[in-house]
Each structure stands twice: as structure tokens, then as C-alpha cells.
Length: 295
Figure 1 (cartoon, one colour):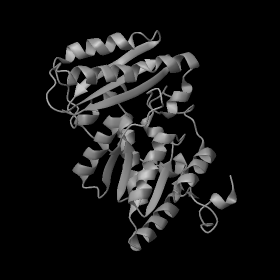
Figure 2 (tube, rainbow, N blue to C red):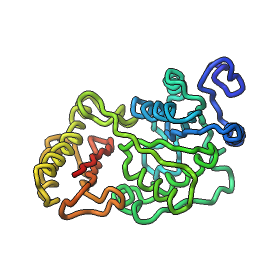
Figure 3 (cartoon, rainbow, N blue to C red):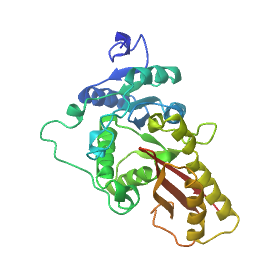
């Protein structure tokens, strides 16, 4: 990694890489003392255009942009893909330099969770269904690391993508309930030209699985068409979605869900605005996607 990328050589090259928790907080404190508005983009790295859209929004709305690049171990259960999750820090720094991000915060797990660390943030309600059913410890890990990142970065605003819709609702609930002074912004899903939602996990797909994965967006599009056409029975909509997904030979549905946009509580009949969420395994790769349908 180029020496000029490391914090301390600000005059030479952005973004500045910070790997030390205390150093990041010290810099953030100094920025806030100068009256700077700090925008944080929490990521696990392996950046794509979806992540960059968040950083661009932060750049447009804030004085300073911090992008965290940290594969958080506490949100992975045993047997999940923590060890093989792509880690591409050098490539991430190159991408972020092109959009003018100011800092990349890439701490070590041992610095975020030092010996003796024994705290967690647990959010009930919205975290208990959907992903919470299939990954029971996931959102405790997410909420804990996000709160730590908010505290370390002193962020005024944090930017999240709609693709992780339930995660955003969990983080918003945490912010509301714990009076965290960080505003949450959710930006639309960025899709490939053929409609597949951009995800770091897409690179796990074989060429044939990549084609099969298009059924997620196709099923969501069909759900929206039915709802806008007047269909109110959720079971009818699920049946139409299932028929599309099952065209993919390797697809296995974890859940299809039509729910309230905030609480995510399931709806048997569509009324008002709703969110439609999917989790589908294509081969060995688990993908999520969603669509907000406003009426």
C-alpha cells in the first residue's frame, strides 16, 4: 500500500487511511471542533457502485466523508462466510480516491473488540423477524458495531443502502431509542443493468448462478405490478413470486415477506405503502433484495 495513503500525509493523497481507533476519534474530534459536518458510510469493504453512491451522497451533503472498511466478525454466525468474505482494501482505497472521500477507517478486529470486550446492543421487535429468524445473532453484531462506528467517527449523518432494508430499520430504531445524535439516510438500491442488486456477495456466483439470480428482481417487479394493479391478498402475490423464483433450478427461498415499511410486521392484505423483501439462496450464495411499493 502506498505510504501516502496513510494518515499523516494529508498533503499528498486522499483518502487518508486510519487504522487506529483512538486516532480516528482524535481526528473526528478535531473536525467537529472546527464545525465540520461529518458523513459516515459504514461498509465491510469489497466496494461496488452501491457503496460509492453512498459516499458520493455524503460528499455532496457533508464537509468530511469517512468510509469505514471493516469486516465485522460479530455479525457472522459460526459457519457463515466471515473467513471468505472478500477483503479488497487497496482496491477500495483506489475507488474512494476517485470520488474524493476524506478518510478510510480500517481497524483490526482486535482493536474494535479488545480482550475483555463484553458489551452488545440488542434491538427487539424489528430485528426479531426475517433475517433475525435465520441469523439470530446477526443484528446484535450489526447494532453493536454501528454504534461503535458512530461514536468513533462522531458522525453527524450516516449513509446506508436500501438493499439492507431491515438493517436500516434496526439502526434507525437504535438511534431513536438510545438518543444517538446521528441522522440516518437510506439511499436507493443500485442495480446492475440487468436488474441484479449490487452486492459484494455476487462475486460468489458462478456464471450460471449469476443468470439465475435475476429471479429475485423479477419476482419483486411482479409483486409491485400486482399491488399497483389492485391485488390485496398477500398469498396471491407470494404465489406469483414463488412461481418466478422457482424457475431458477438452484434457488431456495428463505423468505418472501410483505410488511409494514417501518415495523416490518407482516401484512395478510396490502394496505397503503408496503415493503416486499426476499432472501433466496442461489446455489451456496444467499442473496437479499427488496422493493418499496408506495400507493
